[in-house]
Image: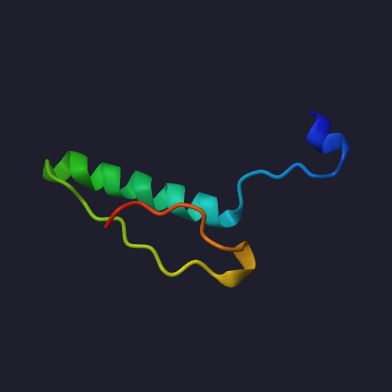
Length: 57
């Protein structure tokens, strides 16, 4: 709450929603296939800032 009153609060971006949707889609495919399913993302646009963490490939 302190961050919001100082104007520094931030939340999930559209990019975060995109990533979550791809992961959920891969999870559903894995249920059907019974195996591991890839998550293929396009490169992160620069407007979202630098990448902070990436999963191992």
